[in-house]
Length: 284
Image (cartoon, rainbow, N blue to C red):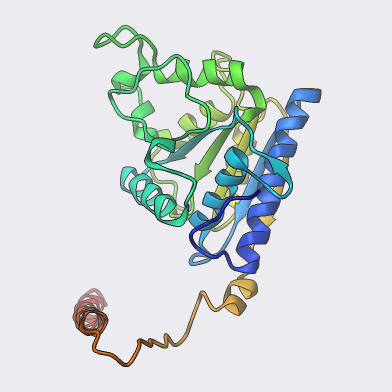
């Protein structure tokens, strides 16, 4: 049993992944049994490996872990507002997991046209695709059968609490950014126009929990049980992931590649440092 994650998780990463997976499953059960809506916030300092934790969580949901078997209906919609971030997250997940393959990780692009999202898939969506100007928003345009809103609504109706909406804010500061963004995110969570059914289980990933809490408050109805799982910065430091000194070793026999790469990296860092200093000085 269990899935082999290619990265060895540190203790705090394994503990966080296990807590998050258990909480999400609990949200699935609560929705099935009582129609209760839930939200879970995972907060972790920058450098803690949020994507590694999330990868382990998704593996647990799809394929099972010590705590529970895999869920054949589990479906994940992963939302950010930076397309490049989605690609980066996909790459990290593929490198970090032996169980998740290319086919499990789908970028939602203009060619996407389905009645519902497929089971045991992670769909990466950047929210610009849902702005009013996007062709995604209307069915019947460009031969499109289903608008993306319809796909989301249909999946919620069919999968219930097995459909997880992930809001990845790990990269963002606290600035307001795109003005349309809060509206689109809150519509996915809980459509004020009542066209979309509310998302049963929402999972926010961020460096600070405030943004996610605000999003939950904006989507006031229906009321949700919101829980927070926080990774302690001290645990990250103790694990050695955030290091003051990096000790590089390689075997005695001739290995030019590692040394060459290190030299190039050092030269590149020195160059960037000079340029950054020059820029900082010029900008006072």
